[in-house]
Image 1: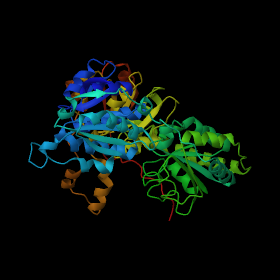
Image 2: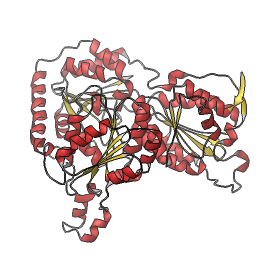
Image 3: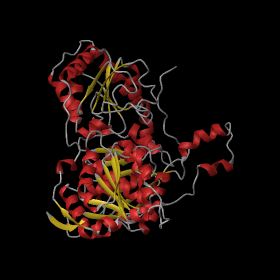
Image 4: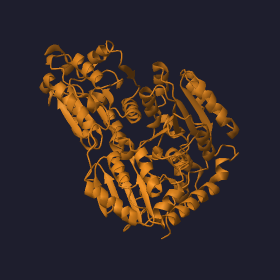
Length: 561
């Protein structure tokens, strides 16, 4: 065994697991950060806020499939905790390291003494304190193991000392043991029961109007090709959750779009009309099912998932299959189960539903209105997005506009979205770009979301992380507009605007002052030119698009009661 500091041990272990970036807010683990200078494969990204650092690690993890590493000292621990909530909701592998109380300081009113550990419990797969330096290697190994196995998720280690100094400064006998396989999702592929796979395939073959609802588990498993192969061989239309939006191309005639609340009308219509819904790698949660109304209660279902605690939880299943999504879909396709002759009637109806949506929204996609209609912004991005781009999208109206209207035109494009935390997208895009430096990374957010972590423009500039951020700027949180009108019985007052309208801000000017390229767009015909200019820039870019404050995103289509 080699005798060395815990700081050096951590740096060595990170390198062994394939970590390329750590995201942090000082002061934390200073010795370990110093050790990283000797291991040039790993870059240090110093953020402006703890939540920003977490979101960067989150975006990194989603872009790479490797655990994102984020760190903060004891006083920022709860900010770290708040940040990992989105990764918890989205099942993202994340390792959060925070400072904590030293054993001999507990219950003595030490500086900054608060027991933060319980706060992490609801949002982590593993939440532990490391008080003994000799335990750091095995605890870090377990952190990687827990973050990546089964349904991925965040873990938290609290290291003794306000900045972790009581752990990292100690010398230990390091055995050099690491498990690099747990540095990537998925490290294992649990095999499904062959009888359940056959039973599921037979049940699907008997359905007249089946539809697949693909979720984030499809993406985590790398099962997109297997999904499309099965759908095409059995002629099953495919709807996706927001997380799996890039699992099937828009041009595929079986693709009906994102289903649920932040959705495309055609997807909701097809799923509502199906006589069998095949949930794959999705928990069938509230957003994906529009609060369990699409499909309706009583609809027959088949569910494929890695987690046995998911299958049948929200819809009783005709057949449940426990196993890795990619392996299960491949096994199912190999059975060559016959497709009923009348399946063509269903796919023909699906085509009419798809086309009806496109026809009804065509005018919005090409709107020349000023201020600019957000549907036009999204359409221009669909047209101009590079073939290998990573698209990172905020929640709220950003998620609604992009989830329903943005179109994946190329198999090399990736789509990553917030699981519900406004402001997540911009720092997450910085992290995604760190993980995929050779790919264009495009963030779509609103002005309300951009305000949260605007300071991270300086982080991107200082660190040379060249993202493109498109802001749908209507100087408001106008997702609240219709609610305000109802609240005031159809007669909102001027004072009511205080609850959702903000000052008009030119974010392009702000970006320029912070060293980025800022582009202001006020006419719809200038969107594509601005975007092409951004793609050629050699620095971070903010495209500030002035949009109509009175235009709200379409609400989810619902079946008639």
